[in-house]
Image (tube, rainbow, N blue to C red; front, side):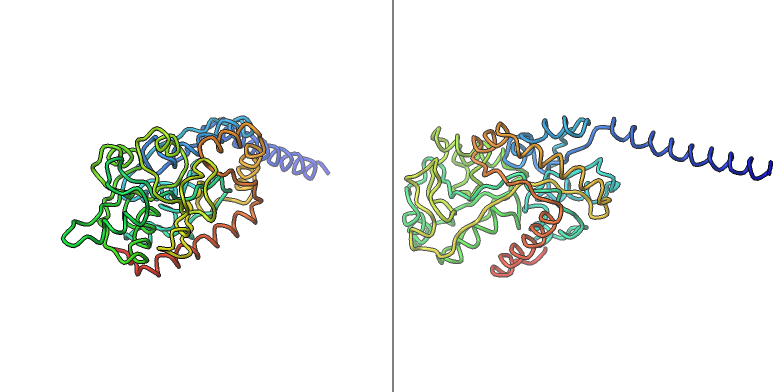
Length: 328
């Protein structure tokens, strides 16, 4: 009897030690800041949008969320860092379709879109074709006429790199309109915005989110046409691309979302998904997103986020195939 009693005591102590160790590890993790990687410099939509939801997520999670801006190589540097991180929820991606899906279609990367799992979408913004203030064109027909001028140089379109949504939409426009364009890549949107306002480049298809709406309203950019299904409420006098009759089915957007490495445990994904959903339910957060010209996403379940991300991979690969984009 006595040996069995001692054995039971020993086993109980061992189980208690394991349980204590697990609890301590969970507590330690809850005190550790979560790194939120943005694959572009500060100031652009990819940076501004997630910062709107992060403060409320911090409260729900009881952890600090620290943004790390890591631009370069069409967003692949930041995406690769998250791909290589330990899949424990301590390093997450504030991502867009640019670096998550499109960059691996345009340049050789060590990751694929399927290496990540979406926590949920934050919001989206349709693309607006904007021009430098001094461009001698005030509508899409005049832009096309300018691009077709015999002997004229190619109109320059800014992008955040080959294969980015900025690049793909510009190439799709050139294909549909029968014109040639020059892609001018930047490390991030902030520098591109400055060069467009300063007249160093001619045009950009950019998501109407973050600071873009204010820059149009302030006269730094000239709005040409909107790549949405209907006109935007902030710019009712700007026609949609489809309205012009020069292109068809020209509706493009860019979303912002949170993602983690694919091997991240379901329980961790659920926890992060819940915190994002709680933030998106707050009226103040939705107002702030709308003020930034971003359409707030409705909270997604993890299953809905999985399905949405898979559909986005398929949709954007179809766009790349249509313009025969290949990795270089």
